Image: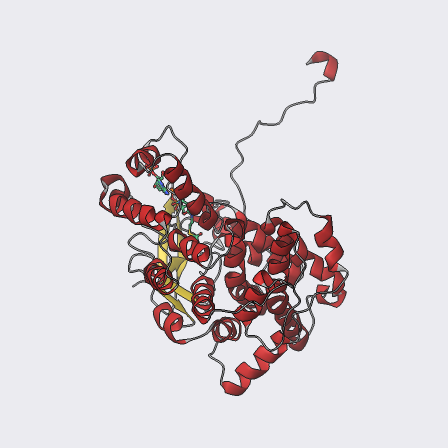
Length: 428
Ligand code: ACO
């Protein structure tokens, strides 16, 4: 292929360089176009715009491929654990035994949050959404570690911030839940694994024993792996763009948590269960809801369906669907909401409207079902997604810093009023 694209605008012709990735995806580099022509490109929602070069995650939406650092998601979900995957995403290679032990030990020894942070929790209303608490708490961590605000610190100081974030997020997440229930906070326990520790902080009560079920631990670990990164999605792009101003890592991740919260992104897992429950309450007539989703005058969308990049299937949804069946089977749960989900999926997959638009169940269609089976309350679903996505956000931020990327600052096409003179209030 030619190494340049040619663009003709009126009388003028511009040569634009092409850039090709390791999987042969090609982009037209328009970086110098404005300097040459005063013309910009426009692409609301960045539907066809690459914002960076990245070596972290590869996905092919047409073929349903997802790989972290080259490793297929199917292999990682089956064979790796979340700590290994976090290390892989952040540092680029799978850890050997010694590297994994050191990494895990460091994370285990930073799980406590400063006692003063408990007062922040106390100040929130009991009904506060845990994502609101999480975003604020993550940003608040920066106030306890002011040295983290210097973006030019050495790599060991950055590593410490990374380990603190990975260590403290489960504590903050579990405590936001305990606060909503007015239950006493459970402190992290260093002899437990990452997922076990989180489950213990969520569900242990001082009055009774809490036995951590290995089936639940395995399912949770798999879910965290499946959510760990997804290249330049809304929240990862947010983390990169906030970080590009040299805001500290805590502030950048807090922005990522906020971006994830929306129902068109990570908030979809909560929205799916709420939708299924509403359909059940309404008598279970899923055909009626499918018709609503197709009606252009009705804002309702089938939550958990459709994806910006997957137009054939979401490989994570395939893995998770099977995991959902296994978990429900092993835990002996018969959930009518799952039956409803299956019916809805079956109908939508055959419906011309969904087929023509390439709308398939995404990862969030099934993740909510598993979280429900694991006893995680609906409002915590997006928090679970954030726990999984954290290594991805960190890896994206780290890569952006290491690549020396410039501050993110898009342009626009102005459509407002032309210059006009101020009119005093008496003459308006
Ligand atoms: N239900 C009904 N119609 C839909 C749905 C849906 N869930 N999703 C897309 N469509 C329709 C749109 O109305 C549009 O139709 P049109 O071409 O006739 O106008 C067409 O499909 C394309 O939709 P867009 O909104 O342009 O696609 P986009 O790539 O911008 O949006 C998104 C992707 C946000 C995921 C969308 O499919 C959606 O809202 N899905 C429901 C929310 C959801 O599940 N989000 C989770 C995403 S996965 C994640 O973040 C982990």
